[in-house]
Length: 111
Image: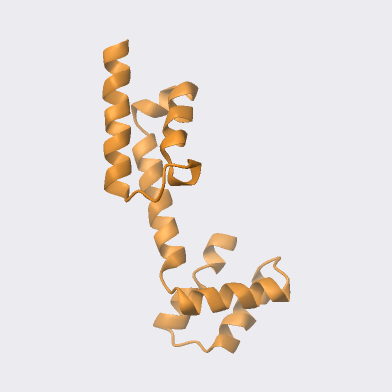
């Protein structure tokens, strides 16, 4: 439900919602405090595509890890260490894809 509600930014843009309309949508549809609802709505006003970009990144990462890497817990641990949230910095998705492909190739050679 939270991911769906994060699309309140789309309502702000595509439907022309006011800040108040966004607050009135988000507050009853999430378990967030009123302070958090205000913070989220203000973030979506200031950074309109952030939630959608995160979702696109999530989908890409799921696709990248669904192949041969998904067959091994050790491989998934290694792939996770490549993720930006793991200290690798903010790598664009094509760079992350290249790193995963290189990991898979090296793992195949090692076996």
